[in-house]
Image (cartoon, rainbow, N blue to C red; front, side):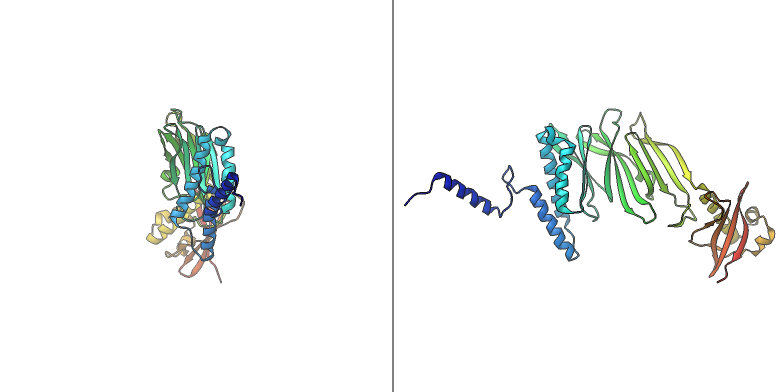
Length: 353
């Protein structure tokens, strides 16, 4: 009987080893390919979604660890493998097996910054910063916030440290705006820290209509919340800020602020002064806001503002506006006209059913 050759034995051993791995592809280090493991986790998520469940926090951490390993390995290889273009191609492959994942990477001087969002679940969005740690490619820092992160390179700090801006975009409001948080991050030694944030400027939150980010400038237009502001109504006052990098600190400072449709906030300041004066019987304020004495006598002290849209009567910068109000269950129409002294009430009528 013929004895099997050494070559056939070698092939048989390799096939047995592959079978022992259960069909998983084998990488250079003899471990299952990261993309296959990522695919397994994606399939697990789909199975959970069919029963109304979601992946555990540990599963998401493992997925981000796989992405970290992929990027760090490419950075360690150097050359074209460390380029943002190559890294983005690899991330696109991971995104394709996940479906709906948003995985982006940007080069910022000597850093590589990833903006990742695997799902809408809380705490899942992250910005991950890669660079050199004691001469080796490594993950330097992670930042977690709510919303979809978008990264923009910024001009370096005064000492030359790399900087970048992250826009954390929330869900659309349905009225052309969305929650927004802008942050400037800077490399500090072997880590990265946030050195400026709109969260400090807008502690109640920023709801933006539009924004642009350039290396040395941010421009953002946003909703203003003031008495008389009503969600979903047109022609309400909005602010627009411009922030520029200060040469001495390397963080953003605001040189200008402009207002769009400022008449609406000014009008409702007069409306609230009127309603407050009616409630407390402030005759001096009433006389200033309602020049017609007969009209003043007709106004009930229980008059209240209604959370409904105003009706401007003459163009984008109106001089006459109808404001909804009520006395108990009785609706009223208050007509204000702009004069040289400000907004004045010129007509008030009950609205018949």
